Image (cartoon, rainbow, N blue to C red; front, side, top):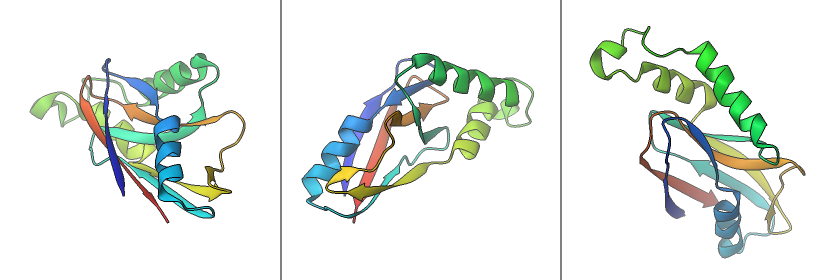
Length: 130
């Protein structure tokens, strides 16, 4: 198991962590298997999507903001971050990616990204390769 920290800079953002995850795969020595990427946080997630065009990331964040607007949920009376919890629940806390020939078997345009919905914060990322 590998663990690293990502410091986010904005309230909502997608941070490309592909290189760090790939490094964990390389260090594991696994040639064929699976890689699990997980964040133990209730207001962050892990997504796999395009990161070559930054507009795709912004579009995803905008779509989630439209689906889950701020300030209209019961949990907002507690700490005003209900929409962050909902976005994290929909994106999920992790992804499983095949490993082939010692590398993440991502498509040409795919990247592994930490999805921050309640930042800025320090986020733990756990990577298990088997």
